[in-house]
Each structure stands twice: as structure tokens, then as C-alpha cells.
Length: 116
Ligand SMILES: [Zn+2]
Image (cartoon, rainbow, N blue to C red):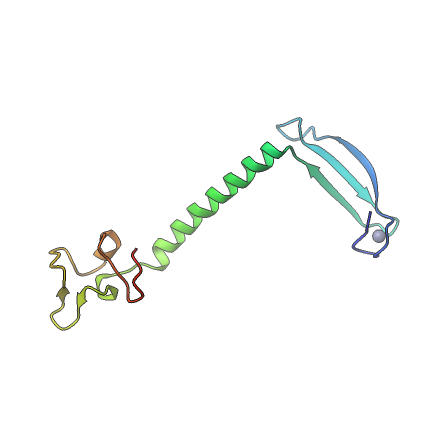
């Protein structure tokens, strides 16, 4: 196998066994070593476990995105296309308009035509 450290094909599999530290016995731990002292460990995981991991990771990333976006892009009514800056009121006549209520408004429309 190709060694990324010394750029030769001397990287060899030296050990392969079930991973006893993991919860699943389906996970196999493989260790590779090269005479140049480069070593790497690879975990071979069943397709279902990998899929489950990817889905959980994706959900976690979505949650992080939701939590960070809601604080970073807090929109208020003055950035909405329906906001009348001269009359200082909502063109749609929404009585609760003003302040940060845009966050809860289903009619919010930004200058690029985007909804919340
Ligand atoms: Zn090497």
C-alpha cells in the first residue's frame, strides 16, 4: 500500500482484529505500518453503521446551523420588503409589525425575494 509519508509502496497491514473498545463487534480495527515509521489505523465499519453515523452527523450539523443562524441573522421588520420606511409601518397592516417580530412573521420578504 502507498505510504503518504515516504512515497513508497512499503505500507503493510500488520494487525487486523475486531475492535473490542467499540460498542459494536462489527467494527474492525486495522493497523498499517511502514519501515519509515509512518503508521495509520483504519476502522472498517459496516455500511448500516456508517449510514447511521452520517445521518446523525447531518442532523447534528443542522441543529448547530439552526442555533447559530437564528442568533446571527436575526431579522427585524425594517429589513422586510413590506416595511414602509416613510410611514414607519407594515404595508400589510400587520398590527404587531415593528421590532424583531419579522422572526415570527410568515409574510416576511427580504429585498431579494427571500422568505424567512
Ligand atoms: Zn513510509
